Length: 248
Image 1 (tube, rainbow, N blue to C red):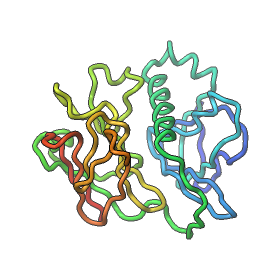
Image 2 (cartoon, rainbow, N blue to C red):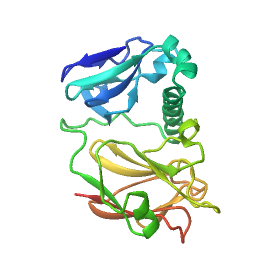
Image 3 (cartoon, helix red, strand yellow):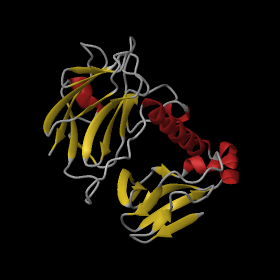
């Protein structure tokens, strides 16, 4: 079933109950929580992204509110629809599963601190671009600079059957070769409260951001990006996949 929401519509409210997930086909929404009367943005989601998926699994109240930032169209999927998708649309079924696994992975990495009183303002400020600093990294982007418009932006290795791989969920897939430097879910670029971070997603060989190693049992999984140019290396020293992340 398709639903249309006008700009400014609160699609779901924190604390309410519902069992539907929403897959955005057009438009953009903001996920937020309210702390002491202050709206605390958590994420901005756009086309082909999903929200409300945990409602299909448990009967707990919604953990956050979602508001349409612009006129938005979404496909509504309920528990019965989800069960039927395993046979009728396995790619969509797998997409929802991947989203759920990614949410759980992020929860395991950190618990968001909502105790800060934040000033009002847009969640995403400025622009973020990714480009390759090695031929192999450039090749994953078609030798072009890419503006990242939606967060989190997830990067990982392209597995043989990545579309049906429930444990692989990426926006940028890297065609790595053995011995692998890049894990199937390697790193993500996240935006929180108008600040940008690189987060290692539990990769086997770690991620190096501006010379600082993340993940791979380093005890540190994320690092905030600087204004201007940043370097991100996916894998160990000598990895062929080195990227420039620029905040403008």
